[in-house]
Image (cartoon, rainbow over all chains, first blue to last red; front, side, top):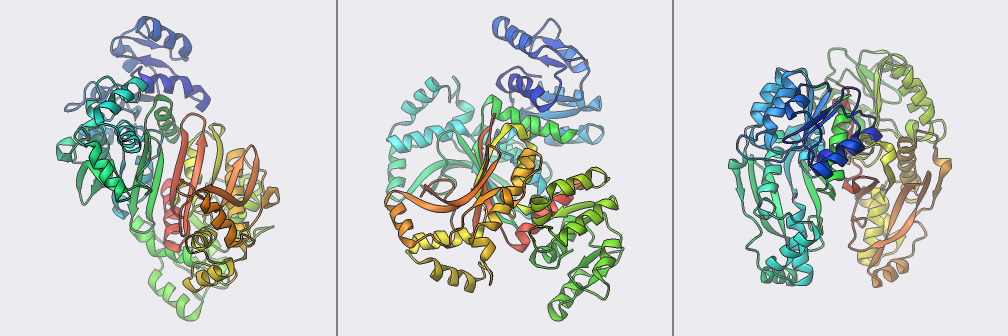
Length: 308
Length: 308
């Protein structure tokens, strides 16, 4: 469900991972075939006609499948329509793999409650860090033995800050350039005001502390007011500024922070990095491409592999 | 099986991960209790008497357990006695979690053959990269979509090279210091001649290409002949030298390589780093503590968690 960059990438790559796509839906249409749909034809139709088929989205949810991939856009508050998609699948005892952050950031306790009554399992590694295995790595440790998780969780904000630093450019200038390059969306609000990074931290907190968190529990500051001069001053001191999300001691902080210029957290461009502090294994660093259709799709496909 | 740093750490941490230790064995003795042994008493006995109990190692293998932890020292060639421990458990339809590299580096095809006939599963994330999830991360991708794996896989060699570089010291001087600090063992041969890193690369190659590799298939050069002057020359050019293991195009290369001084591969001290090149998700970097009893034990315990 969802025919944006992630949903279509999952459909494109599914067969190389040994899976059959029995349906694709977007906000207004669906294509369903229990024997497997013609992915190329459906994606071509999406490009030319902006629909994926002649059926309604509800037909997809009622159709034949083992796992529902929820890849509609992230929404705040009630997390709809993603929330209803997830619970519909779980109530039918189907598995769910999420790329949409909303249900596990804003309504984690609700979806977990529905999952407990279901024979289906819910996985959501794709919601944090794109291609980087963040949730699954935290999950693999006993959560009691993870003391903190922090990192760079938004590629757009990181691209803007690294570009401002290396070329002494203003925020507005670099943002416009990022939009031209397709790195920043037309409406980059959630990327630059910290909301996107905060939602990812909320998901991490829910995993670490067994639920109870929404974005209301996060203290969030964006990068819109970081002046070029602050980056120059930081550089004189061998440091730079990154938008860091930090989950520790049962609280969530997101904001621009000073970090060592050649340190592990100072990834450049659209890279993401996550540091996991563990009690028995020290600090683990995981970095890579934190966004992108194909990148996020591989995380979805890794999760599907775990369900078999 | 194995009461060295890793085996005893697994025993110490097992209960915090919700597991019961029903036996511990070393090369000459064993303690077994289906209801759970007194770990502290056994480890105290190991420290004072250098035995773990009054039984024979064979009694451990014949005892009651769900998963055998193979943590005896890595041996080359026939990989004994680890190989016999692993097959004994699989033949009894038990799971096996390895920290010992031998069986999966030197006799991968043999142990996989025995595993196929068994209801038990064999996992070995602890054999590569200590606390860093390397094998499991590669495994989570479709192996066809991983094009290369490279990295710093031996903490002792990395400690020596980073120390030689930062303080312009000779190999012999730093090696002696590393031995004093307990970073290098009394006999550091396998760490400095590249054998240890090569065995880890062999395991990676076996996972990536479905078996067929032993250390005979690796081209290996150690760090014993890297002069301090080579590191100074590299530094003048913004580079440094690291012992890099590289698995790509179905071949294994291990040796000292020039890498950018502030680049991702130039981790310092005893850190390890692994870069996984994927077809759809770009490059993934994973770094952390590559050795140590507790660190490696957490990898064993993560694997045990997957078996439940």
